[in-house]
Image (cartoon, rainbow, N blue to C red; front, side, top):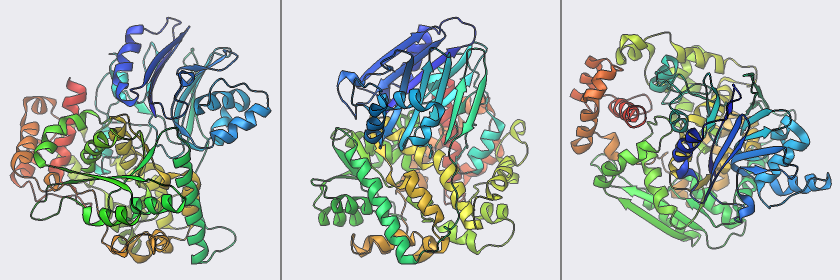
Length: 591
C-alpha cells in the first residue's frame, strides 16, 4: 500500500518540482516508510511507500526496469506475483528485488497493455515508457485502490487522492451537478469517472488508460463481471463447497503475500468472524484481532463485543478491543473528515479511522470483511427489492435511493437542480444483458459500482490515513466471479448471505450467525443531540455554508428543527449527510 502521484506535460516543459512536492505532501500519510520522485522530459512520477513486500531499499519507488526504458509507481499488492515472477524469469527478464512492483513493470515490458489481465490483486499504477513516450495507467477490477486524474492546458495529472491534484493550484473547484445528485441520492456514491469536483475524475475499476505528450487520451475495459448461471447446474451443497474453497484461497493469499504480520479487523459480525475461522483452518497461529466500540445511547448499544469476544476466545486470538468515548469521537471527527478523499456519509468511516490508529501501532496489514454483504446479498433491501413490483429502476430506487429527485431539488439551491441523473444511472446499470435476473443485476451493480465508492473507498482512506494496509478477501475477483454465478435464492436464503451462513455453521458461534444484521454502531452520529447536534448546526449555519449557497436554506432549517425525524431509506440521518458534505467542503476546498 502506498501513495502515488505524477504528471505528463503537454508542452514539453518539465513538470514543476513545486507541484511534485505539494502533491507528495497530500499523499504522505499513505506511505510513511519512504518517498521518491522521478523526472524524465515531460513526465514526473512520485511515490510514498508503505513497505509490505521486500522491505529492503531494492523496493524503492519510482522503480525502473533493468533496461532503463520503463519506470513505474504502484499502489497495492499483487497476490500472484511469485508465479508471474517465475514466468518472466523463464522469458529472460531480470529482477533486482523481490517486490511485486518489479513484477508489474516486467509484465508490462513482456505483455504490454494485456499485463493487467494477468494481475491478481488490488492495484493502481502508472508506467512511463521513455521509448514510445507513452504513459500507461491501470486500476484493479474491483476498484479497491484509488486512482484520480485531472487535465489542464499544461498536462495530465494523477494521484491517489483528489487533494494532491488540487494542491497544484491548476484545477478549479466547481461542484459537478451530476456528482452532487449522486452524492445526495445514491448514498454518497459517485461512480467513476465523476467526482463531486467537476475538474477531478477517477479511473474506472477494471480499466486502463493511455496518455501521450500530444494530449491524446484513451481508456479501455479489460474485465467485466458476468452474473449468469453456469452451463452445468450445481446443487446447493456444491455451491457451498466451491465458495468455501474459493474464499479459503482468497484468505490464504492475503495472509502469505506479506513480509510483515497480518491481523484481522473483528467487528463481531459474520464476515470478519468467518475470516478468523478460515485463518485458523488454514493453520495460522497467533492470529491478531482488533475490535472497537463506542458509548451507548438509550436507543442503541455502541459496541458488539458480546459477539466478537466469543470468536476471539474460540480461536485464542491475540485480541485487542478499544472503547472510544463520545467526547473523543467529536474531537477527532475533523481528522477523519480530513482523511476522506471524497465525502463519506457512512458513520463507520470515523470508527475505521479511530480503529486504524490503534491497529497501526502493532501491525501494518489487516484483513477486513468488507464486500461480503454486497457479494452475497446480506443487506435487508435486497429481499425487499426482490419482492417489489414495477420497473427495475423503481424496484431499486424505492428501497435504496436516499432522496427522490423532487426531494433532491428541495435540498439544493436552484443552480444545482437538473435532470434525474441518478435514475438514469440506475436504469442503465440494471438493464443489462450480463445478468440472468433482476437481483443478479442489482448485485452486479452493487459489486462493480456502488461498493467501490462507499465501503471500499471508506476502508482504504481510513486505514491508509495511518499507513495501514487493508486486504479484503471477499472482493477477490475470482471469488466474486463465482458468487455472481451462484443462484440468487441461495444468497438470499436465511435472511441474506445464506451461503456464507451455511459455511460458517460449526466454525463460529451460532449467536454470531443467527443475530440480526449489524452495522458498525456509532449511536452518537445516528441519534443527533447535544454536542453532536451543535456541531452540525454550527457547520450548516456557518458563514461559509451560507456563502457557498449549496443548500436550500428552508430545507436545512427543517432538518435542524427536527434532527431525529429525517432518515433515508437505509436509515441514514439526512442532517448528518448535509452537515458532513458541507464540512468536507470546508476542510478540503475552502482551506
